[in-house]
Length: 581
Image: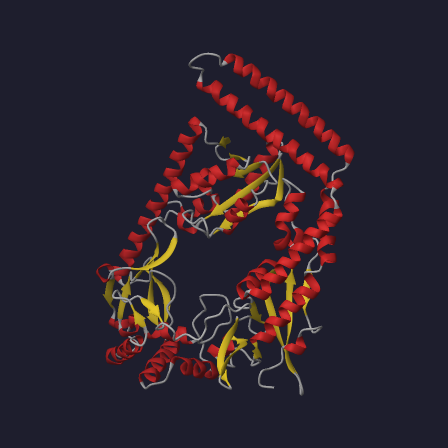
């Protein structure tokens, strides 16, 4: 019996009043991982580290955004590669009553048994188990709501006192005072803030301001997302909108989570805002601050807005970007690790699309030195050409399939021994079921007897599934390679047709076969300027269904069998020349 583990730890589950550190340690990922292994080994199961799914710093109210949980659920189809799932307690699956029970049902329906090592018991949804699971899930949901209420109450108390409720704000330094955090003005950063307000009020735009600050070497705020630090128009816009620089702290303008506890930012009504006056934190003169807000309000009138003030975007027909770009979001600049973005411009009466580093465009040359701009069409053709020439080759794909078949085809001696063992287990469980059925004759059999029968029925179903998996693995030895090759050829023809007919289909295909971003490496010389492309391609995204059909019930990682590093100068750089060359 192969056992998987699922571990989850959420920072919002800390009790801010008592035992925070101890509770945090008890629920840490390494501890759950180790205790789950010991529990499985004590039961005689094979605890496979390949099937250890983890989510750290994710709320139990989130489900779609938990990558570890989603990987676990995907592994259940078409057949799970494990028969047991070990968790520390029921609340690790989630802290939403309805959704957590739904996840549990999905796992059990796949034939996987769930065990809690803290309770030393199986979690199921039989007559008594369903009631117990519901009560445990409801209790976890109730505890999450209590923790949220405690955190909100603490933030309200801090906001009313004008104390720090979150992280650091540019222009200030956080200091500890009498058990809480307060702000003091950071004169170096405050000078930059005053400069930004003054220049913007004099008519300088956000993009020009960002470029000048980057050239002058002003230290920017810490970036909230991945990418190089630096000044950008959005960073400056955020600074211009902060009322704290005028000596007024406003808390509660937005709500980070919805009623169910999942991340969903929404605006609060003004009546719920907490406003505190702090003259000692004033950096910008109130009159200058008001002037800037008036300019921002006038600029906002250029966009369509709903009656409630929500931005609807540009007026209909005013946006030139109506097509789906194949490489959007897939490319990274090798110099700064920023995104490669599309820019369009009119050339000889026609709109042409180009690819360039977004960081260079928004933050300037001081942050990224990559000034290479190439036609988007050439970049897309180079990537798709390399995809066809190097990765989507029938010989390469069939070689991967052959490796999978060779790895999954069992040794005949081992197969016979395993079949005999399973047959013996099936006979034993069938005899136990028959004996229990004879004891249960009557109108009102004991609850414990009914429970034992359901346990045996579940075990029998699992054993029969294992037997069918052996049949599938045995059939691998008789796979018709000519039929398989025809299927591969048909699949490749289907992809070739898709990516030539529709850019969205080509983009979807790239996301399946590219692992990580495409690195755009600028190469410059006296007489040449071009990009060299590097990316890791894998076949797992294309062959999942086909390999699963060949190996029922087994986990297949096709991309681990024949990785391919695509791109490079061969056949690509001649088409990725600088548009200005």
